[in-house]
Length: 206
Image 1 (cartoon, rainbow, N blue to C red):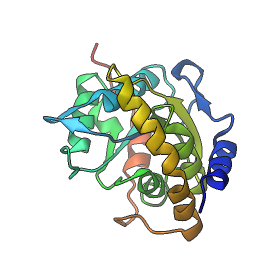
Image 2 (image 1 turned 90 degrees about the horizontal axis):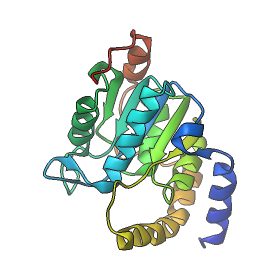
Image 3 (image 1 turned 135 degrees about the vertical axis):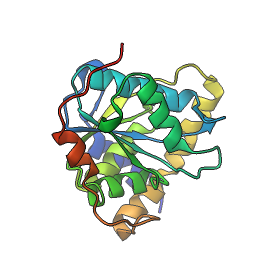
């Protein structure tokens, strides 16, 4: 499979559905995709995603956060790092739901829909990653809008490398959707997201 067809599909699926934090629509859930950590703390890209998520929740754009990543990633436990960072920023712990089996972008989207019952959501990641993420979420049955995150500093060379790698991932995304493959880990339905949404909003720690 070449790159042109998948690129066209992704661009069309994501068109009009990518926003900055201030212009983002509201949704019940914001899904944060995992990325590398170091010594148990988020690295620059993941920190940028988490900072954007904190802003969305504080602005009332979403009430529940679903953190999705690899709890046994090569760089460390992405889930523990994300939860700890959000709680330290004041997000109430009972508003955060963790998916430790978001092993890649496709798995995050499929599991959000199948396991956690997410039907409408904001997805937070860097601009180079956002079109594929939105396209995959929509293919999973989620009414998804993407929110652009910064990278909290970091090297420009790393950004360029990741942008090239992202384009090369487009054919795999299309194959995953066409094959309807199951995620790497399948789980029974989990009501944690809907339960968190039903709670009264917690107080922010300033």
